[in-house]
Length: 304
Ligand SMILES: [Zn+2]
Image (cartoon, rainbow, N blue to C red; front, side):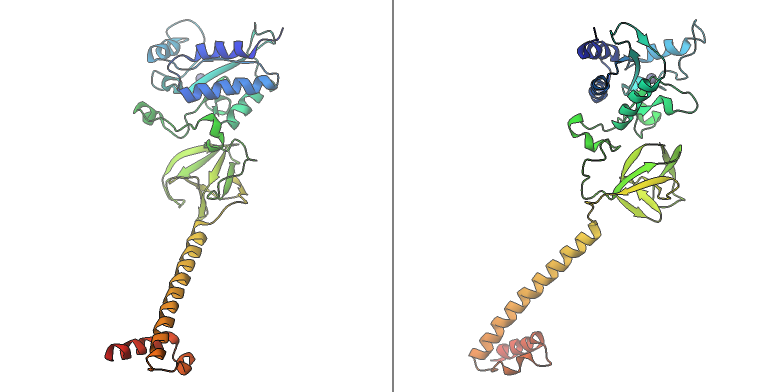
């Protein structure tokens, strides 16, 4: 008999621990659900890890028996902040753990990445195939200082920083999406190639771009990446409305309204002047503009 979805979820929720970030837990459960729909049975082996647990794990293969499983000391693992999970596959009956990194394993990673997770299998220095996390753009120092990433609720998963559903229409203020074509792309804190590099984004990740300036795309906030086609693939948002063009349109509309109001006032003054016999209205359309003429009339009215 095939293992029940709920069994996989229950086991996983238990393994993630109570210190897991509630949104990460929500996303992990959704990941299990989505994989299950494709006939892939996934379980989460670990989530939140206390500093004491991290120390014990770090000691393994160093001062205690076993293989080295981590390079992270307490506070250096994203697990210590409740933002990471590790997964593995189980047999159809749910009774055997399967640790072979095969097509199914990679498919789980792909689903997770589409939801905004970072995958340890993409790492270069210490490849960690079971690992997924939502560190987003925060450094360990920021995490240690208590900062946490914004992870939107799943119901609005189109707001996930990485675009999870390219087919979903983007808001009109989004210029388009940018997919990273290189292993690591610098994120600078200004629209200039000399601006400080504050972060990097990875191959295959897709982000929203809000504007382009000096050959760099703005990914929101003050985060800029090269717009070079060798580095990123840009897809324009057909619904995009340029805010500058919008503002210009608004300003023009306002100016037109103002001119129309002025003209109405002028007409009233002219009418009054005609009634009082100051002008007969005949010459009012001549070289002198109606506005200039009106000013003259108003002066004359004041003198009467
Ligand atoms: Zn991990």
